[in-house]
Length: 111
Length: 112
Image 1 (cartoon, helix red, strand yellow):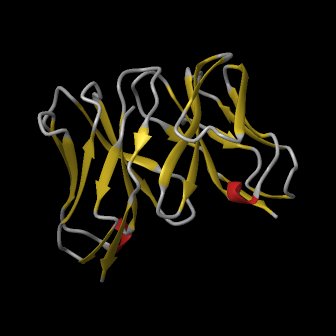
Image 2 (image 1 turned 180 degrees about the horizontal axis):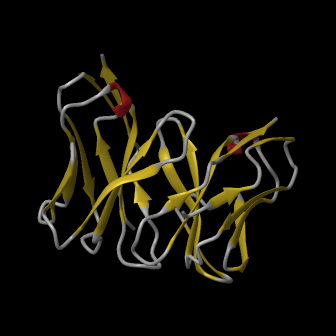
């Protein structure tokens, strides 16, 4: 059974803090994604990675960066958190053209 | 890039009725179209998908149709049940190593 694990489920951070959201998958998938989910806006792609050290901007990359040093791990970084980054963040992974699997989600509140 | 439009944003049906959710996409190179169901507080999960070489696919009470010429695809749920209540997302993508773009979601409510 595919497992995509997001280490932090609920976080509260202060404006200006640096925030790391970690995601690990155990199925040797090439592709990994970070989405942001907000009511009425659906799932918006922040960044995706199709291989180790490879990354592509999604639709809303501003204010975010990512790191993929190992195939199984994809990290989302908020260099200086702002209140408009309060949201639910979903990590996902897939192999080639097949099913995309999501993690449980990380609820981030920036105060 | 790809743009996926999904309608309606909310849908309320009586138990036993059918529900239809429609999506359009902009990138004619897209060839894989999955549908995800997200129950309250849970992660989205794949319920059915279709590839561009197929016009229709069915799995029990759920079916998906694809019209490549018009660049739209639809989710059909028959004999709806209260446990079908959830947010449904459509998505589109090209081949591997390419981003997956989602629609904004449809909140389906099935009233007992």
